[in-house]
Amino acid sequence: MATLKDVKVGETVRVVRLSGEGAVRRRIMDMGIVKGVELFVRKVAPLGDPIEINLRGYELSLRKADAAMIEVE
Image (cartoon, rainbow, N blue to C red; front, side, top):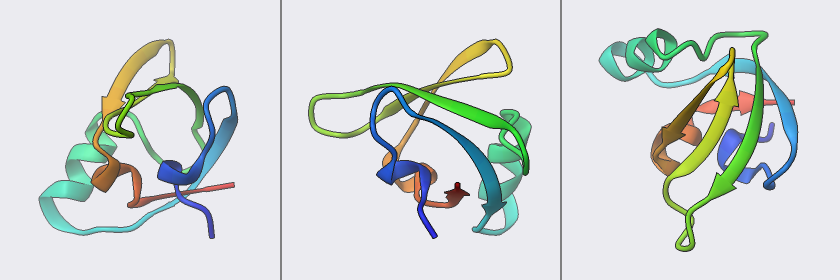
């Protein structure tokens, strides 16, 4: 399954599953990234880290390592 780190700039995807566990998973969920939410990849930094996304009316920057834990379709 594809992860958020593999999504190209300008694409909109839907969260299918969150991998990871404990505090990291809880932090991702607290930012509003839960199953079923749509994410729009707005930009990626020149070296690929971080990734800026739009969700639920706000912008959020995620590290590549965190984006790899978010499975999307």
